[in-house]
Length: 529
Image 1 (cartoon, rainbow, N blue to C red):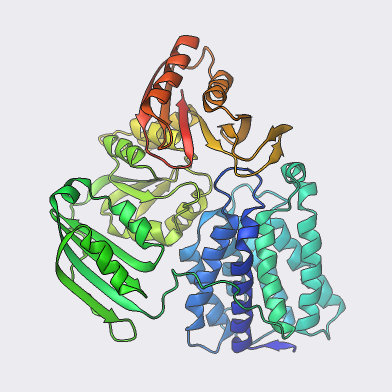
Image 2 (cartoon, rainbow, N blue to C red):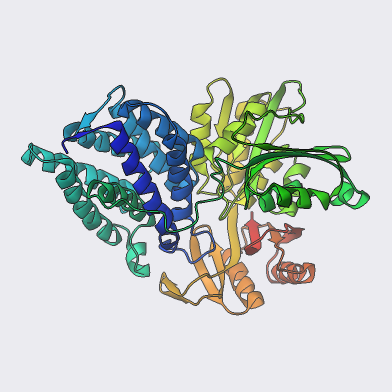
C-alpha cells in the first residue's frame, strides 16, 4: 500500500490505542522515581485512547480532517507532561496534512517530522533522552528511508521506523544518566513506540485487539441518570462532593454534582443506573429520579448552571488534593480548586471548563506539580478571550506561599512579582513510600521504605518514619531558614506531626506550624523558608 486512506488510518489508530491500553501499566513501571506517581503510561493512555475513541465516530473521509479532529480531542484531554507532549506531536502531524483526503508515504513522513518539531517547541527546556528524542529520531529515520527507497510501501516504511524507533528508545539511558542508573528506558518514548507498533500491526494484517475490558470512562451506550436528593441532617454537614465524584468516576462519566443548600443534584452517564440510585439513597430522600437511555435524545431536567457573578479583578485557580490542603487554600482566598496532584493529573479540558465559568479580569493558575504545568499552559493557549497567567508552582508549599503573598488590592505586575519571589524562596520537601526496589544517586531504596525527597532528589530512605523525617529535616534546615510548615497526611497522627515540629524547633532556631492536610500518599509535605 502506497496511499493511505481515511478508513485505514482510523483502523491504524484503533490498533495503536488498543496496544497502548494493553501496555500502559508496564509503561507506568518505567518511571525513574519509586514514588506513587508513576503515571506516564496512564496519562498517555487517557490522552490518546480517549481521543481515538471520540474519533471512531467522526464521519469524514478526509485524513486531514480526521487527524485534526483527533488532535483537538487529544489537546483537550491531555494529562501530565507526557500526555501534553503526545498531543502536540499529533497536533503537528495534523497541521502537516491539513485538507488532504489521502496521503502518500512522503506526506506521512513529513507529518511525523512536523509533529516532532511542534512537540519540541511546546517544551520550554527540551530534554534529550525522552519522548522528544524518540519522536525526532523516528521522523529522521522515516525521511532518510523514503529518500533512499522512493518506491517503498507503507508496510516497509513502518517496519523501518519501528526498528529505528526501538534503537532510539534503547539509547535513551545513554542520554539521561538517571535512566541508566535505574536500569530503564524512557517511559514516554516507550508509550510513543507502543502507538507506532500498534499502527504497524494493523498494516501487517495483525491488528491489536483490546486485551482488557474497555475503560469505563468511555461510555457510548447506557443511561443518563439525574437525581435530586434532600440531604439528611448528617450529610448537610458532612457531604463531600470530591469524594462522591471520585467514587462515581470508577463507573460513570459526564458527572455533574451540585449542592443547593440542603439538596444535592446529581447527573451521570452509566451502564448501571440502579447502582447510582442506591448510592444517592444513602444521602437522603430522593424527590426526583430520571433514567433515560443514551441511545435516545437525552434532555437534562435539573439545573446545573452556575450562578452569575460580577466580574472580579482577580481569580486564582489552584490544583491540590486533601481536604485540609484545600481548606488552607480557601483560607488564603482561593475560590477555584481543581482536584488533582500526584497520580491524579487533571486534563487540559478540566482547566478550560473551569476558566469558562470564571468572570475575572486576571486568572492566575497555580499547578503545584511539575507534571501539571504543561496542561495548564495548554489550557491558557486555548482560551483567547481571558487574561490567564500560569505561575509554575511545582509543589503545594510553593502554591501556598504564592497565595500568602497575593494582595487583591495590588496591581497585577506587583502581585506576580511578589508571588514569584515567594515561590523562589521556598524549599519543598516530602516523605512518601517507595513502590519498588531501586537505586537512586547511589542510595539503596527498598519497596515500602519511607523516602525523604527535596525538590526532585531523594535524599534519605529508611524503614522508620520518624528517623527518616528527622534526617530529612536535618538536610534542609540551616541558620538562614526561619519558618517551617509541616503538612501531615491521612496516615499520620497530629501527635506525630507535632513531634516532628518540636524536633525541628529545638534543633534549629526556627518557628513553624503543622497543618492537617488530609492528603493521601504523602505522609509529610514540608515547606521551608
